[in-house]
Length: 419
Length: 184
Image (cartoon, rainbow over all chains, first blue to last red; front, side, top):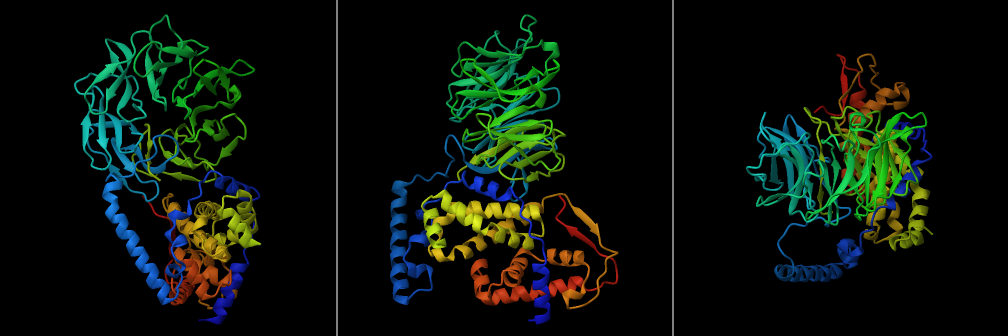
């Protein structure tokens, strides 16, 4: 030991300004409110006899060791009768663990580990892989893929095994803009927008590839489908292609098929509407409301985007003013918060519009918000260039860049896994 | 008093945990600030540590060991911060004009930038050992309990950390380019 060096090092470490940001403690305490305490049973060291944990007496250790061995043997014997040999899956709804992030890199869908880095290509695409969506249980990922000048194909890949299949079969699918397919909450079906005889329709395909059926007719032009968490409805953007229906709208159709209901129409004509109107619709986790973007006028009658909520009775409540230019709202997994982007970046608010706070995107801005992380602590978005995927901390002030070369504009998604 | 707060917090009392966190926040932030040398990363590390402390508080058997429990979680959070920030774009700084004299006495070295760079060249495990020993003032046995290593290993990390810093502060014949983080 070099005493002089040690003293000097201690002095250097002590000579450091200690300035704690005034809001830091409050943010940290708020963050703990969203976390569940683990029970004592999850920590064997906390309830096993004390001699096992400490360097206790030999007789106590001996007894504790025998007890532990007996318990383990009993568990091994009982396990085949009590526990099915299936991997743990996340809960069907609500918060879950954070898995992999899917995004297109150099035309191929990749799965990226946001914690450790590394990107794994997904096999099964036929050319250029586009918008992707994980199944609610995180075991599969569906994505559009196409060769040049050919129809889109909906590919379903198993995350663990890598096996993939085309579930649209021989169906000719043309869509003006590939958007992610919408999974049913039970993971057995997928909804997507396609074109038949020149008209847009909403289709539901069985995840095993056994069937594809249209659930809408000529009355609507559905795009951007989103399945309600309770499985009963599919919301969509109604794209007016017939001149008699010239305004974009927000609609819902029973998932089993039936009459569509248009809940809201844009206030301006088709030729004038903003591109983000009614895209990226987000269901509240209780399936009672939809969050969406539509255009609105400010005090000078100039048009801007705004964010609004609507229930299934068509009762709307705007969450932002037109001057804010807000768009792309997404609901948190627990339904307590909403996030949206405005001209300055990302804002998080409680579902009733209170307690708004701005998130730090470190100058990267935000173009589109795609989803909250399954555990509700982050937000997956595209940076202001609408290409670079970023993960923004929803509780603190940090942002991580998913730094993959050749990342393309598209629709990333975040896998739900068991915690 | 602290043990009572820990016990109440273990039973789900948020106010008790808030009191514990409030009483220790500045100290934890100071430790993280010195390990990470980055105020933003330090703030994130302390928040992560407090979240994990609340989540795993019932794993703590000895209520009087709350401080050691928090130090352990804080060091882990510092490790995580360094790993996350490694994936940021490369930051290259040319230090060719800041050669330092070869001295053992830090007080004679005026260039705090050089000290900073030398410290940041160390792995987090060595930085944590140095900070817990020379700033927090813990004995090797306590540092070992926090880091989960024997006291002898603590001495090794202190020795190698100090040696590495002194070597980094020595003058070199040719200019060096310090690289922080990694490229793609």
